Image 1 (cartoon, helix red, strand yellow):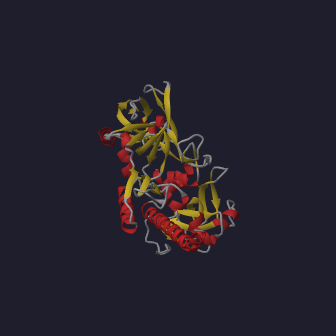
Image 2 (cartoon, helix red, strand yellow):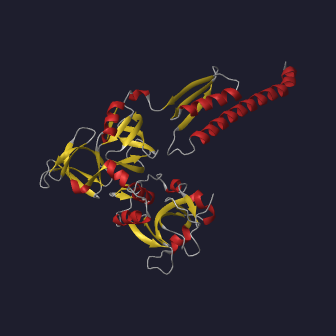
Image 3 (spheres, rainbow, N blue to C red):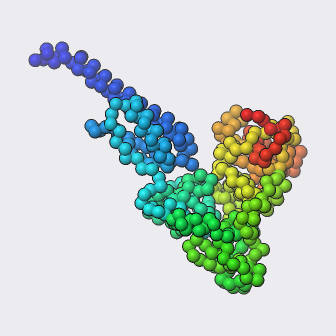
Length: 392
């Protein structure tokens, strides 16, 4: 018997080895297919959901997790089915969550709302949304909604900050006359009188329903039904405001300088506080263009610009990008962005400081050598036929 086991031990070990290798290869193939689908359909988890896991059972491959794109799910299953001879058991959820029923959108009802990376406090602040912003509700967890904002950015928001609506209410909101706040900060009062009780405050960019006029005041309403009055000088008709936007360097400079001195807040995108890309985002938004949220994402917008040896090619409104690493890394390591005021002068929200003016020109009183050393590229959002742009 011992001799028999001895004779069989080597073949048995080989069989076990090959079975193990086969299992490893199978896991490797599945992992590669999942990663490939993720790269195609959700290369940036700030703007797309693709959280997939799997386990191999006797019944087949059990897929679980969630995506926000049904095409991504179908493509993944199709690729697995083609390359793996196992039954595919689909337990992947496609967002929005069906538990939300018909309430697939939400309208922000607080002035400035923090958006977090995860549904817990304290959690990393990633961005902010303003009153009147229409969001897509993807799912709910405890006291938070997972939302998609108009620029595609994803995050978690406190449920008390957003009013869920169905398609009928959303259509009513979208087609009703609205106003946008153009003053940096102002109050909504209980009656058309500046001495009346302020009900809540608004900031530039907030949007409210317009329900009528009263002697220089406008009656306004929020999505949740709250009403009040705001001075007409502090607002504009939303449609007229949109149609009046003119993306010029002068207009961008004017908006940017109105924000001088506002404190730096990581994740901030309002006059309460803003980070570097939040600052450029606000400036462009108030001039009719919605930039991506983060500096590395903004570095992919517009067209590249050759700044010139002495920055002579830079124009007002160009976006200037900086890196904390070596220049060779360039766009792979973008960590900061500023708005050009022409040549080497620019304005930006500086970490641990505030919105301020700086310069890349060593002869300027605003010169900051560390920023010059970190500058890597410039992009132009304003359409131009200038020969100084770099053709891709």
